[in-house]
Image (cartoon, rainbow, N blue to C red; front, side, top):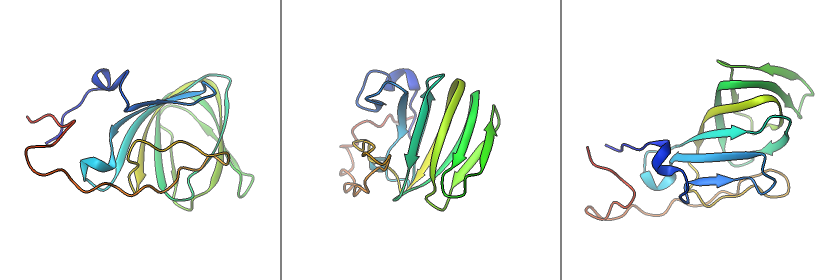
Length: 145
């Protein structure tokens, strides 16, 4: 069992910020946890426009706070986003998230990210191989309950 709080992730290498200052991602579950997905809490700043393209990952996003618009750059279709909205990028769609009111969202990636990825100039995360699990007794970052 793994138990973590966002408070204990804050200020660690599991908290990753956009170099432009538009978003912060708290990476709660990573590839090294060996569960087959990663799970993040991401906050995106009001007034920002963010271009993403996860060419190597499927991402599911559930918006729990805030509002804005999602643009599917593949089709040109736009979708309003608000609390309770979910979108699934199951076709590796290039997309733009425009934020009216600061957004807080929960995101799942498959394959999982390992935590060192940063967006390249096209908004893409590289596919990084998940390291082999640590031997029993060396489970760094895990809290036993």
